[in-house]
Length: 336
Image (cartoon, rainbow, N blue to C red; front, side, top):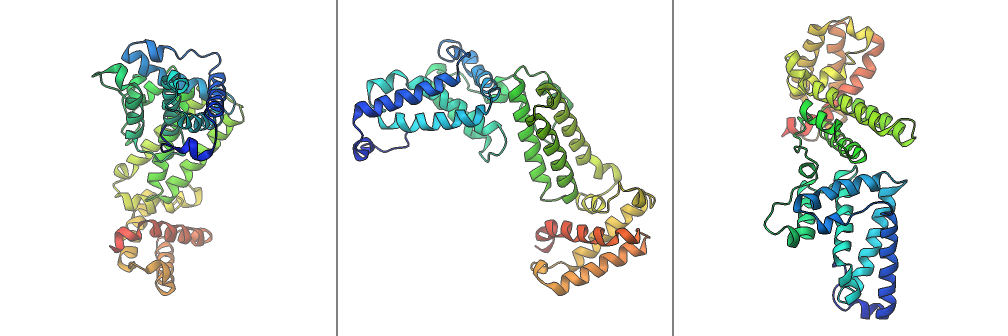
């Protein structure tokens, strides 16, 4: 809440009574968003009950039309107005509620897509809000508050996915799952071009159907769980095929699911992938991506390998371009 240093109210020239009225107006806007939801257990319940209000409130906000956007805007404006009069009795009277509102805002930012905060941010925010009330009792994050183990996205075990499926706050479950999948796609985009593209397209289509309200939240959760399971299988695919992480990335770049390519057989495609890794590693330098002569040599090398193993001629150009693009993702590590 300390967005403004002491004396800012005087510097703005806003009379105290006007600033207080502004704060009250912003406060009522946020309270209005919570119409139909009782958050008082956050202040009156046990430590566990208080923390469990976080996912419940998130679920309520996410269930409203444009709920997150409206809520974040309203709480941000309330926080600024509150900061101007934080030393007044009127501000003191709503201090705990404002703290709760901001805890939910932080939780929404942390556990829904398009956020770059560390997992510790939410813990710290909640701890700051409820530390006095819970005394020495441990404050847990949203996963623990909801009875979920924090996932290791190697990730998404069957046990974790089943817990998400049974999570009572469906809107929160959907947002958390979407963010976990987005984070995993982002990680894979640094090493496997085809997997990241494929899973990104699948996620986008699934979420778009939900945003168009053509399917229910529970169904989208099931679809995201299926997508997460596919991603886990893909993560283990290289090991099952006897390929390294680098080799499976080039194996995927060969359009192995295309019927015209599939006829070559797994063993031939794996051989091509292994030889591509060896050939490209021998040619990359730190600045190879800006040296057209090196890139031209790589293109020739890739085409020669594809032709050597009978890769469909009409698909060689596209495969070559994809292989070069895949190499660009990995070249920093290789050239180091």
